[in-house]
Length: 450
Image 1 (tube, rainbow, N blue to C red):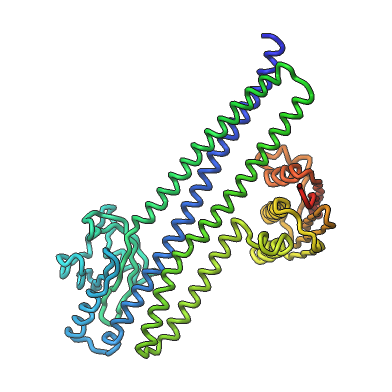
Image 2 (cartoon, rainbow, N blue to C red):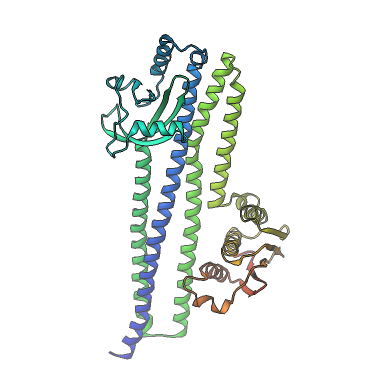
């Protein structure tokens, strides 16, 4: 083999190996992020359904309260309660059911053939004794139970989430449920999107790899210093493109979750409608119901802010880098229990958006490393700027480490390498000093990249 061919082969093979590693990492990372997104969406939808079910049951108990609280335990009163519950439905498959402690069905408006039957030992297709599980949830659990039940509108078995409570004086179990096909479909859609995204990414990487291989092969034949520098610049551009795409994806997911979280507010709507009904009827419980609705609304708003801030801090867009770092420092201190000292001398000169995002992510990486590895008690953070550059310093009083041995640790230093790559992209300065008494990270970036 001629020398020029050897040079080309030695240039191409490491590139192909690197592309293969990048492809593997992209696949693993996309699958992991997709699974996390699916779990988050599933948890959000289930939380919404749980709140909705609680509201339905609370509305049902409020409707029968005049009869149940009357103290009458005769059959006529009980039949009136069952009749009222049988008329209360929602949607095409939303209804209430009542069982006694022995598992006998007392009321089932959509499957009347079950009324009067002893269903204590009945199991669903998965072998779960449904009535026994519901009874345990009502008596000793939180009232929620998942199982499989025949859907009245289709006659097919489907996953269902129920919420049940006990009417202790009569020994009745009252509950209702929602079918979960929409949850399964949402998770399936997310996983399909992840698979499609991986396929598209692989095609893009394959295209980039093909172009890069051809360029490296051509440059290998006439290798010179200028062509090598050009290849390095292209590699840095590709690295920054991956980082930029990651930031864009985080912003997109943030907007989607922010829009989708409105489903959680549906359950709060029912709470306020109940309060309105109670106010209209002069029910003294109206104020309590209204307070509960306000409390749940505050919780939903807090959840929106928390998820949105975790994915893309809105303060970076509205109030700037100083306020965003201040909030990050405060939240980290509350979560970790460490003593935080934050000094802000940035002044009025706001850096470019890309620089602000980079510094914010650098601080996130640094605080994550401190929380996981430093064993520190106190962290000092300072932010300085002069209109030309921005300097971020992070100092902890932890156990420290030897920076020279960092690369020899298997899997170690990923966060610091990410920080260094962000800084190098902007042409900034990165300094790291560590000893037994603590570690100091010093990063300086140009305030403007144009």
